[in-house]
Image (cartoon, rainbow, N blue to C red; front, side, top):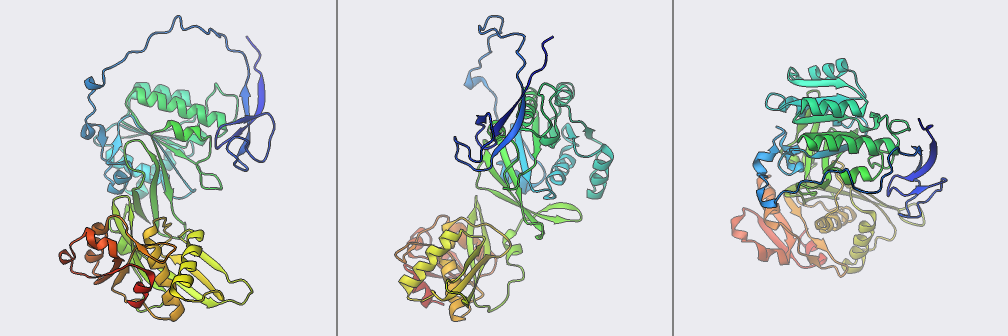
Length: 457
């Protein structure tokens, strides 16, 4: 028997590049502090045959002969917000990776999914972090009837793959991949080699038996899922469970989805009953909004196919230092500086001696440029101490020339604005061509530049 030979290498968790010694920056992807130590087995394999003799040829199928009905292959989870993010439900045989901060609610969400599906499908839950009694206590707290949920505590990936072959579950949860161990890899659980090999083995076994598998992954200090980047490449869907621990709600996003859009989000409320979906996020985000407060402006953004109303607040004060301070929470800092320059140059407001703070209420991270006009009017309102009407909503992209540009899905935004009881809306002049104003019970003001919008306040 060949003696086991171990070798220490250094692997970039971002691109997978291998180095013989540690260095601060990866020479391949140019990322900093992504290279970690790993141990590999360099023992020669017993069979190094380079020919393909002895291997069975693969069986090809004609694409037209394959039955792949969208409705038959989708499993509804019973949680509409999760189904929205997944593209309509769980696809049979799909590999789904879900990451998030500790305590975000990943395990709770997946246990609730198991509880919803266990009476109609074969469901299995394998944990490497909790004992079966701990899982039972959590299920009792959530009010889940777990008589049809098969649970186990196991970290050996070969034992789990063997159980997949025998049990053939429709849904399998692995919590978490960093605790799994493959005896064929001579490194500790959670290492790059272990995570890569365990993920590959579990996905291979699951797809062979048409088992949809959820794999829970820890995140590193930067918020990315810990482990090699190849892990995200080989799964079908990558989900992130986001949210500040100080806030009652969580946001589920898909950074990768082979079976649906990556623009959809799902919103959930953290309660004593577990994770509850929020079907009307606009109402929640606007809850507690003050009346006639300067620096406050309501805008409407599109997340996937859903319009969401949220409040943008600004605070302006005279600076006590030579260089004024700018701070932004929820919007891009560079975008804020660009919009402030437009306000000063195109609208004639001097802000060189003002500290300016911008906050998106509710902790949302907004990337859509349709919030530009709302940010500018919010700052204007804070500078002049003139409140924006409480029944007004503003949206539109702003260019460097001060022009207000068109945005997409104007009709969806106006329907949501009307549904929530607002009466006035400021939109780009180009957007008025996309709609019939008589269809809405709204006072619609169209503007072509920032100055026109300011005069309406």
